Length: 484
Picture 1 (cartoon, one colour):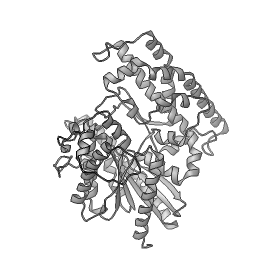
Picture 2 (picture 1 turned 180 degrees about the horizontal axis):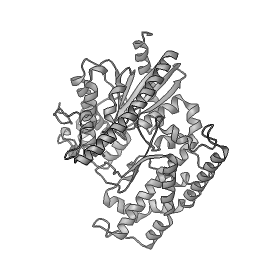
Picture 3 (picture 1 turned 60 degrees about the vertical axis):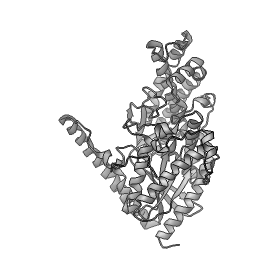
């Protein structure tokens, strides 16, 4: 079977830590200094986690699961699904605090549209010159200006670790100047959410400081509510939609997309739903550790997200030791996209190489590895829009992903909690066969191939998947402890 990844010995984990080409002496000095500081911080975190793990081991056994995959593969969303299912009380306590994150997601999308519109108004290009813009569009840009200040304020209050210029890795379109906001924390979103709770965060914070946070949140809410009609007018404007179409930009595929929910979110009495929290985007830096007490099983679960960017992959290895299971998320909708860090690399190809590296490690030969073929919903949308797989995936051959081609093929049967049309199932089956073949060829010893088709923003289907995964990992953990 032909493979979608290159046949070279390229190891993405090794490439992640290689120095950049043509590095100057000053750049090398700065890089080494930054790497030394990053190692120091990482070592401190590792030592603290090691001590905490040892303390937990003395108290009671726990089930440990590692989440792996590219950046934006769905790891954080999977974690939120686990928390929603198995730590419901904590989930409900935190849910209202997500309002600020969701407002920030909405505002970032609006600001991205304003940047595109402003560029089209001041420096029209061949693809926007004939779009009929009027004075109404200039007024919208002016009236929505306060949102830029709200965006900066929310990011400051969350404690921005970094705000880097980034682009949508998709080949369909690029969102200019959409900055990627991130926070640095050991417990991911939990530390960030504490800053938006109405009561004092801890004993050191006074009631006066907590009241000031509440007043600030109310001020932000008033600005968002006041801009609701203009935000909706901007998003639904025919000229703006035509501009996006001509630039081939699909902003609705961006993580944290809420432009279709403006009326509901920009309301004074808005309270986030479970689905809103699942869809919300809050990028975190560093190793994230989450603990859940699964009442049905009577065990504590520890879940680790070690990051998915190339610079994070060098830190994966220490966490491979003593894991009961690994969930590897493969965003299969990314077959036509490029890596954010390296525009030369196809995202699906990079995922295949990561999967090969993972399966080939001797230290993981007996570890249960579960594959999530994720973002099936986005894949289905791209196929409906006519994006041809063969244009981006050479191993797909000359076949066309259309209904007629599917009818000529043998039927495929996949276990899935997600209903999908035959066209999507046809393509997913082809992708899945590559993952299966890689695992078969590169595993040090025979291993069972566990795979689930997922759309982790679909909470109902994901809940069914997680129940199956939870039972399988728990059985493996009990066997390892000689309790089964």
